[in-house]
Image (tube, rainbow, N blue to C red; front, side, top):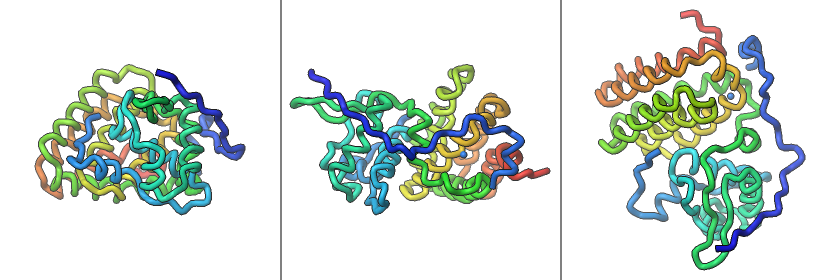
Length: 277
């Protein structure tokens, strides 16, 4: 099988992730199992929507990244072809091609020629520079993003409790176990399992809009608050928070779910927003 190599062109104004962010600056700055639809085209459509942005290829990058990180497409699997992606997102094939060049430059995807060719996912470890480039929240203050996360995560949790299948709950439980197994792995690995729990909750809510907002917030917070996740956050506590949240979802009780989400989100909010309780 012949491997096709992309010629990569990355925009000069691609923003870089801020890895030097001090924890003291947080308050001063206002960052695997998916239940597939029986209809393959409908499953694809769940992740992709029309784009009108003048920098459309960045939104294509974001949507493909979301599809990969949320577990819709695993390493070794093929994405929809370029024509299908262009149709689903309402952009031209050259725009999709430009986005794929960016993702190929980061070894996230590769293109194969021939009858069995197509665009294949290489890895679900998406580099931070790609997430930073595609992030639509980069112009907002950090405190605004953290405040916006709470109502989105709460609504997702409430809807997931109503709409989740036993398979959804099992997938979330499996992700918790995978986080426990990789709790001593490097940050980029364990944060993926952390986020995967939230993505699966978003999928269980059956709301593509809320799930996309959730994705944007999670990835943006990781890019802008890397030092928090590496230096302050305790992975054992995260595991306990996920277990508590899952248990609350299974009760279906809105009051219990609200309590669990409050406890789940509070540690990061305390750092960014300066909560005292």
